[in-house]
Length: 147
Image (cartoon, rainbow, N blue to C red; front, side, top):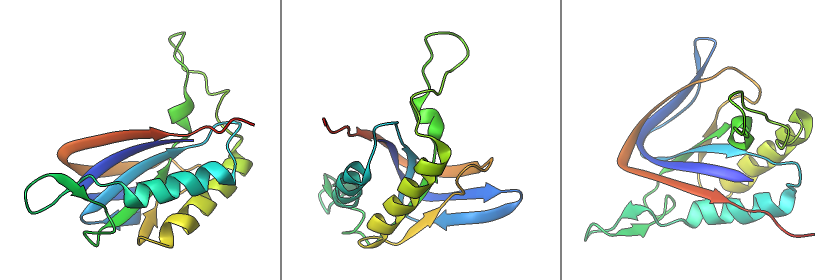
């Protein structure tokens, strides 16, 4: 499982001319699933994301989480995070199949929503994502458990 996390002033997702998710201050997160991902990875990264301290405190140090600032999450499914570019045309064979990935994405939204209000993109749709990166701050998180 891979997350690309961007601290934002605002962000939105549009599908076919309709806004499907929109937030002000918070985190815009691209979410990708690999073939070996399970609910275990989802639970771990949902907790990690909600507690990640990348917002400034009163002294300007990254010491507050999205929970601490009362921010929101914009979660956007993104299978291309598993693109391999050995050749010029990316291959996505390591990405989880769409039906299984949809279930894990929904579970990820559910787990994150326990701690932070969430908005989302639409799984499998062509999306237009707009954001104003604040910092800029971009963090990559990924987790694979050994079986």
